[in-house]
Length: 426
Ligand SMILES: Cc1cc2nc3c(=O)[nH]c(=O)nc-3n(C[C@H](O)[C@H](O)[C@H](O)COP(=O)(O)OP(=O)(O)OC[C@H]3O[C@@H](n4cnc5c(N)ncnc54)[C@H](O)[C@@H]3O)c2cc1C
Image: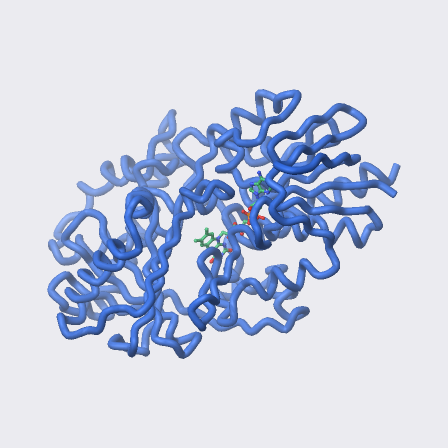
């Protein structure tokens, strides 16, 4: 029986391991952390489930996660990202028509920036392209402009990176699945637990070196050595960038170039549990238009899903990175400053504050991949290419169609399991 090692017990690794096991390979998963799931991580330490990594199934139609949710009987609940209430810095609330107009205008600006960028001979950032487009937008009031900026900031949070480092050539090039976004109120870990059943997973096995030739692979961890016919590597792009794992012989130059050119973005969350809700329960998302360049600006109203008074602040890019150096207390204070601008000084202090630090997490080194200026879509295919038919690469960053998502990572695991099955069937 062929023996395959899978590095990483995130969704890509678990998908690959399960599929390979179905195809009668002997599979062992090596995971550095003392838990499975990777960038899917449900925290239940405070008596309610909250996802500190991925939260949503993006687009439930034709999404393999929808099938898994059915198979494992996981509850899912619709999030309407247009169901928002947005506050200004003096506590005033923007009207629905102001929001609609600003949203349309921001989309128009991004579209025009992209069209303009496509005509250029060299790649520039989305922010730079926007600067060329803006003079054409006349008669925008200050109030409208700050709201348009809010929508652009929302995109930065989604992408995990500032628009001044995102490639205008690669902007919005990925396929979005239809059917709306669904949150898993009891936690994404239910999918992970379902997938992990019956798989040999070794926790706290931090891989430090991968030696390979055309016949075998030797994987060295902090405490053991493992020999295999092939290995599926699902190390996050950020970890590959950090060169924390030694490849011997080194990876091909083309792969190193792809690793270097692709970017790793940061989306962080600040979870705040209050003694009681002081915000409206009518909205999924609550926004704040700050007069500062970067501030807390998007909150998920988790109360609508778990019936516990919890808000989750979402931050992205350089702002998210800058917060990672601060303590929970300091971060909590800064969020409360914003919430007091919105709701007044009478609101209660949070009972619980949990802040994520995905960039500082040495087993993730960021939240998900993105496309900086000069990165190419083909870099993802190069990243996914096998080496010597012994090293196989999966993980969200290797997905051409659905990078940065759970379903992209899941499908990449199945893709590599199938590649190995075909390779060893001969
Ligand atoms: C805050 C946040 C919010 C997100 N929101 C969404 C969302 O709502 N919807 C969505 O679709 N996607 C979302 N994503 C993206 C999604 O979580 C990822 O794309 C996906 O989980 C990646 O899975 P993966 O298996 O490729 O990588 P990972 O889950 O990172 O798995 C890789 C595994 O390798 C392990 N590892 C690392 N180094 C070593 C080593 N040296 N030795 C052994 N093991 C190692 C890691 O611990 C990890 O378990 C979000 C991500 C973050 C961080």
